Figure 1 (cartoon, rainbow, N blue to C red):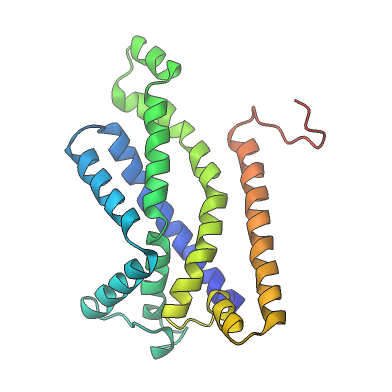
Figure 2 (cartoon, rainbow, N blue to C red):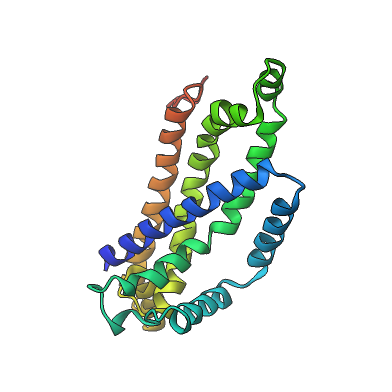
Length: 221
């Protein structure tokens, strides 16, 4: 149960970042041009689509076009194809929000003082991106990590239920419908613990990528 949710969640997290980071970088670099306009339009449209409609649409697409199982028990956990659709869909659910977040940060960096100074020094746009902006891109990536993990918890309850995956996400609504209060309390505790630790992980990683940030027990600088 936990293993199923962990595998799908980890794969979805990797997929969401592998798609959103390059897209956000390209959209920010070509701000105002056709790539940015088309990308912004697609992202806005995807955000407007309800999550359930999104899941069912891509579930049908995966089954009808690519022949992927539309239900996890069809081939079982041993078959790689059983994981493809639910993992990709779970990852895509958070891609639009991440793209907007990363793009906005990259655009802010483009107008920062250190970029202006780099241009004065004669660095090309490509050199500025490689040596400065890309380096600082790790900050929003780390900042968005806790929110992404928490978002995956909500997405997992829908994807696991629709694909009939034997994970914690499916177990929660099943327990609620069955009025199994002990299971509901246990799952809520697990999800809350994951959320708290993801926030703590984000804070720790921020101190690594940005040495100016320090963890303090007293709250003093």
